Amino acid sequence: MTAGSEFVVFDVPGVGRFGMSICYDMWFPETIRTLTWMGAEVILHPGMTNTIDRDAELAVARASPVTNQVFFVDVNTAGSLGVGLSGMFGPGGEVIHQAGSGHEVIAVELDLDQVTRVRERGWHGLGQPLKSLRDTPITFPPYRDGFAASPTFSGLGPLEKPGSERSAAPVLRVIKT
Image (cartoon, rainbow, N blue to C red; front, side):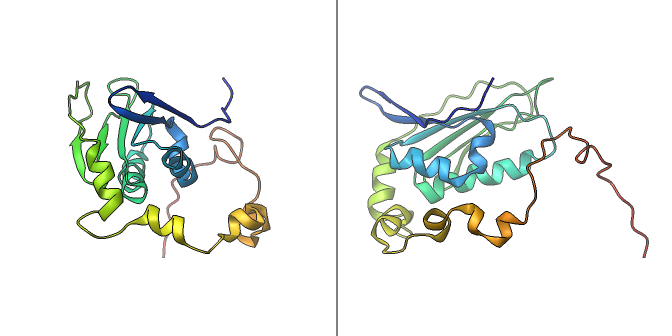
């Protein structure tokens, strides 16, 4: 398998426009923002997390829809393959359903007109991030100058994948004071 380089949205006739985000993609807000920019009303996000960072992923899964005013369907493997805890979140970041750690069949009805209403008026009449982003005269420096132009980013060192020699070092250290 190799990483993709295209953003995918598709229409379900008579229903709406869906975007695809897979596993680690959601850690990059630009991914979800691009799918939204392409017209997605629902982001489908399958993943296979079997690690201890699922709570961090759920925070991202809940923040992504509120900042992009979309539904976010975060499906994670359960049982022996993953920790489960799939979730469905609305365009205001609200939890529509939070699954447990076991296998579940989740049936929900998503009102895609809610996406339109939230984008037009904001969540609870507040916050219209897509309109605000559209109307701002600002070109954000990372996009204008590139991420490598940042001393913070350029000073991070090389990308190390889990299992590499350095990342295989013990993660628990006891410090006595």
